[in-house]
Image (cartoon, rainbow, N blue to C red; front, side, top):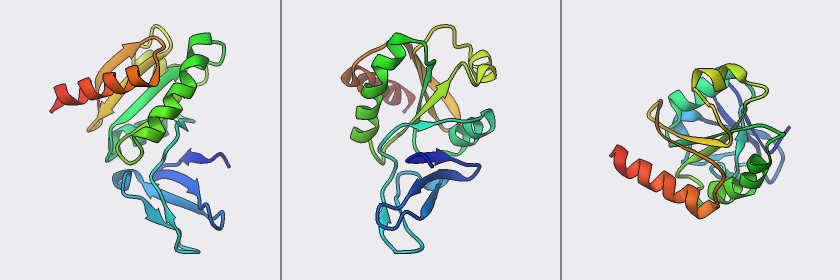
Length: 156
């Protein structure tokens, strides 16, 4: 299992102590949970999570208690590969305050079409189940965070 995964109910991570799979429901993202087996605290996601299906994309953006940054990307895209480590920095810096998710537009073409992704990398910010902002192009972590901050400030 990858470090983080999505299922229909939430984000699934392995407990750092015992390896048990632990789910944080979308509605409780940001709170952190305890492992049912060893009672170790499992923190909120601090790295990007891959979105494997349209159904799980919809569940995440519709139900997440936290804002969700979606990175629309493709494996052949050089700028997309350049922005990936920057998104990891953002996910770690904003742990418990937002979720970073990655949508491979080659695998989930229906999402790319429905959300009118015409250029990659594209980053979209979702809050309350709807897209509130979008930006196109590679940028450093500080630029991604500035985009997020501006979008959230406008949405308030």
